[in-house]
Length: 148
Image (cartoon, rainbow, N blue to C red):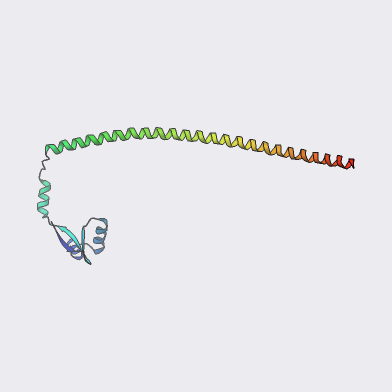
């Protein structure tokens, strides 16, 4: 069980400042209850001597609890082993994906380079064709002027 005391009473009892009490409340080291506008600190009723004696006593753990704990440890060990295996598989797949990505990037770079070469050749061909057309036009003009 616990009793409710004000924060001021708690500070006096523990011989601490109000700021220290507020810090302990914020960090969760002290449990509080809010009733209306007032906030109270939960102080659990345990005699120090009884608590110390309870720690000194040998605690007998039932056998079924020990078996259960062993079983849980085995499960944890198996899960850790499985996690290692899964991590290895994940690393392999990640490396494979990175290799495929790099290969795809190289292929795209080659394709872009070829497209640039083709587009540059077409521009050169267009320039050659346009200069030829202009020469033809000049010839046509000359021949028309001679006919007249």
